[in-house]
Length: 324
Image (tube, rainbow, N blue to C red; front, side, top):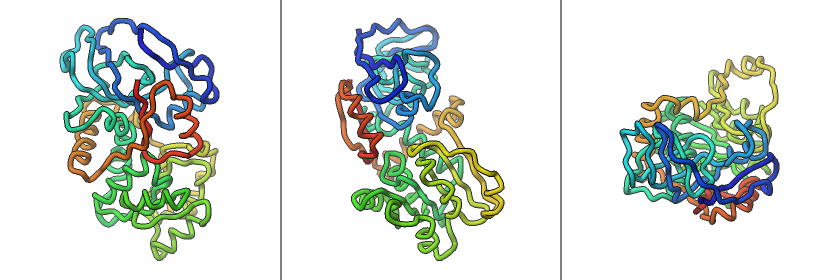
């Protein structure tokens, strides 16, 4: 039997229950992973609360974790028992042990701890596809990162700075501003107290930004479009304040022939070769020290309800990791 979080009906954090469940043996192409650490992300809240549909009820939340392989299904060739692995994939991570398709796993270098891996896989993969593929950031670019002191935001700030970009970050408090600046944001804007679009225009002397990375959603749209230079790109990758509602596509024309996209990790990592390349790039920038993974706190899996309440209340910075 293995400790597992189950959700029987979508709703608030309190709908998550801890149960003991025996996972079935791995099917063909699957492995059984004993999780040593599990990442907590906003996407978990979207599934738990019903904003994102789940395949069926009950379900186990969680998309990210790290551990070791303790069971192999038929046909698995590239992994063996005892391998250290990490993943950012489909639901089921909030458990001491879980089944997972082997082609969704990556081998974890010995230099990276299980806790660091669980704090970085989903957020780090997200930063990779945002910075290297959605809009390929290069030296000389000016970028705006909303929620710059959040888990993804702190990685974006560090990685973008390492690429030679000038980073402007919006944050909710002076304490978070310090964190964002330490991570590489040259300028920070207290979005609760300042008109962030006006401040961006002031900071850039009217030149504005090449790209806006927005994981906040409703609260930062459409003002984010006013932060972009002509032909700039608006990248919406999250909805922490609620989803962006239907908008007039003509806004993109009137504000400078802008581009807008809503990318997802699922699409960018669908091919095995892409997943492996993302992992290599992420592990490389972490190993080099260009990106330090911000681990806010670790909690036992039994405290999953409190972990969700803190994240939903925007009380956290960096990453929260659950220990089974």
